[in-house]
Image (cartoon, rainbow, N blue to C red):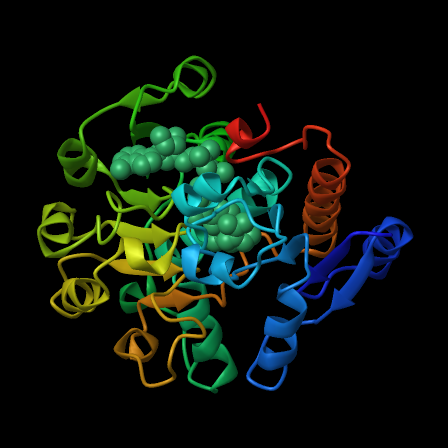
Length: 324
Ligand SMILES: NC(=O)C1=CN([C@@H]2O[C@H](COP(=O)(O)OP(=O)(O)OC[C@H]3O[C@@H](n4cnc5c(N)ncnc54)[C@H](O)[C@@H]3O)[C@@H](O)[C@H]2O)C=CC1
Ligand SMILES: O=C(O)C(=O)CO
């Protein structure tokens, strides 16, 4: 008997076909109200689920008595209650590393777009309002040779540091749970307190996971510490930021601009105040969303799930202790 698995996000056909060679697959391109009851029924027999974003905690586990593997097609795993999974002996996996370069490219594009006002000035041209030579009301701020402060100097953070230092001659400072010697040696990154980083940076780039400690890490006081000419970039998760405080900081000119790939509520509601501001560049959570990288992420998620179902150690486990 082949193991029953649920794939609950759209994945490339070749990856799906590979999973189907050794598993009985129920496939949903995405979960929604229409397929909810079918999904819950399938869950009672599923040994594994693979996809992005499903909230898994003890309530869901209670409805999935045979589940042994949860394979996320994301590196962030704030959707998973790891303690609940570990207690039940369910292995969780994610997709680190394969997306670092693509996410770092997205962060650089937000840094450039906010400081050089790319989206706002694109609109000026397309709306027919480019009437004369542009003058200082349209000037932006430099990126090269400025100070980049990275909060969360992990895999993605150090890949951003590499681009910023090598390509833009930026000076890198960072705040992290612990020192990142690799970034210090290879990108001349200097460790500092959060307060120092906020006061000194021209660009603040947030790249921590969402945890109890990082929930609303950026709030009113933190924005007040930033320079009026600094931009704030969020590539982590929306809930690491108090969005009301961010709106206020932008409205009052406490900070220059914000570039946001993530929001507390996704899709972000169209009437959200952040969407009305010229100095905010928004993206629909596309940090890793290229054809190449999403393919690699789906492949790694499949490798993880198939290894774990076969009793082997998966390439990138989160709670590896479950199998030891
Ligand atoms: N926008 C997007 O599409 C993407 C978003 N992400 C987000 O970025 C996060 C980071 O990804 P990776 O770099 O692969 O993870 P990572 O685990 O390699 O790096 C995260 C870093 O944050 C640090 N950190 C954790 N809590 C902290 C705190 N309270 N204060 C300071 N530093 C803290 C850790 O020490 C670690 O060095 C993911 O968890 C995810 O939420 C990742 C990929 C794509
Ligand atoms: O991998 C993640 O954590 C994302 O947010 C999407 O790539």
